[in-house]
Length: 83
Image (cartoon, rainbow, N blue to C red):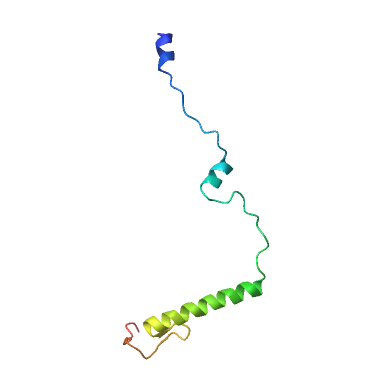
């Protein structure tokens, strides 16, 4: 019986690749060196520019000024719903 049990044992395939090799094969960086975060002034300027751009695009599309929280003249007619 032991011989029959030994005969049914199958070899399990294994992978000899390391995690870093798999990441490199997948096009992912192995390790990313983390630098210092940008200064607060630079970060604020970057986010302000992005926010301004988004507000301009929104205003052009929906004729609504999100900065002033007020409707603008354009193709949509804004109607206040709540109190």
